[in-house]
Amino acid sequence: MNSQAFYQGASFLTSASSIANGPPDEGMEVAFAGRSNAGKSSAINALCHQKALARTSRTPGRTQLINYFALDEARKLVDLPGYGYAKVAASVKNAWQASLSEYLEVRASLCGVVLLMDVRHPLKEYDRHMLDWCARRELPVCVLLTKADKLKRGPGLNVLRAVEKELQALPVESEAILFSALKHSGISEAYRVLDRWFGRDGDATRDA
Image (cartoon, rainbow, N blue to C red; front, top):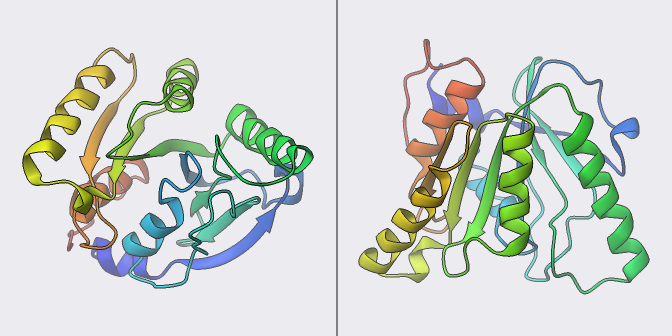
């Protein structure tokens, strides 16, 4: 099955406020993480060629649960709560940040992290913390520089090179991709990463 068809078959599995309420910790999961309003849900929808698989909002911080999407019986995509700025009560924010930390620390089936950064505002403090965490857990990380359509190609490539330079210092597999959910750019590159992490790179013919 080619990559587009495989990811297009994604279906919503469940939402959970903590890993204790989520699906069994088995198989393989790739988590999508990033600052609030970085475009996680939009990226998942674009990669899966579905308009409303993951809920999107113009309001930062709307993803307050861990959302699981099944690709097949063994593989899942996971939309994590956004970190950083969010216009919600402090108690609510602290609760979902705790669930995010718990998931990242102990989830054994986690096999890679897609870290989303707005191409206009990359490598903020929270992003660097996430990169350090991936290095400590020895997890591969792929940075999607989202909303790439907001910059011209030259400035976008300059940001890409700057992020790639920073990633070179990490002792784990890492790469960066210019990505636009609106223009569907960077999807084929993202498929190559996901297929490799999911062990599909030997049998997947990739279509953007």
